[in-house]
Length: 393
Image 1 (spheres, rainbow, N blue to C red):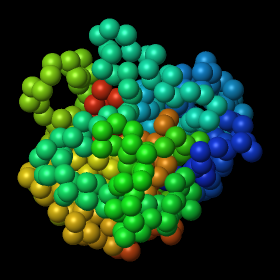
Image 2: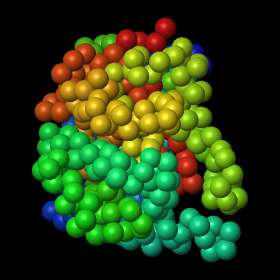
Image 3: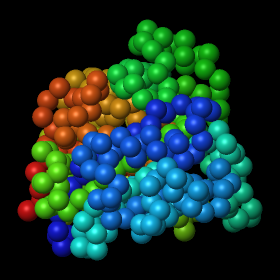
Image 4: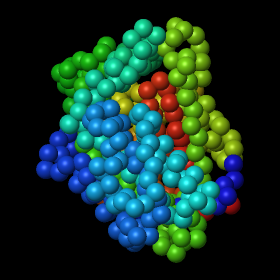
């Protein structure tokens, strides 16, 4: 999987995430992230060779939004690509930018993910994009209680509910450290029982408190060739490898037949080809796309190739906290901020900031050498990234 040349992340910019950013229009919101990413990289727009833009355009219902957004992107007169792959849009943007630089086509690429969900109808977009007959099981979009039901069946109701809520509260404590996060609720562990009873039910045991929200926001990242990255940044974060896996053609169609999840398959392939035999020990951080605390908890097992109740024990023993042995989502994760077209990119951006040592108030208090970041989209579409502190050899 050796690339033509190494690619470094040298700049990260993010807007403030909120349910309603009514004081800015879409280009202005995007400009917040672009401005900060360029400043973080120490470059101007003149030095950018290509811009990659992505969002779920059917959510805001604006056709070819990259044309209007050029006002905030700074892409006028430059090569510009538009990417949309559902919930994975942000991670696909990172893949595209990586390929553009690794191939030698461009030396510096700016990628921007964005969503202003208050100006559209997300659920309307999701439920009208699938075939009404063959795709009817997809029509609920991101809301499903199946993971909660499966975990309760496997581990018992009391333990499963308790650990899922603890995961949720840990994510909120991380979000409280992140000044740009959307949902910063100030939750405490002694509120767990009250939240489990009083939070509105969505589907089955999936409650409002467990679930991610809709957010307005943008994320921008600057990618550079190894030569440029070393010139411009004292400590870049290097994109060592990434993999994309999905099983769209089989999703939900054939009952309860056993299968390997796309998360586990992606992790197995990525770890094998990079010589990682013990991800818990060899990785320092995981920025995971966790749409709800039930999924985040369950997916720990899949991504880290665990068996039994190892993932539950990680939460119960505080291993996933920012000061724990294996921090997960020190940014607060998707449950805290979910600007869909940017969400998966934020995972990579936050992992890169941790490697650079520039995550600010939610920086992990130790050196980060190797980090994992994931993206997720409907029909079990997984993108998984491996980032390193040292340039890949």
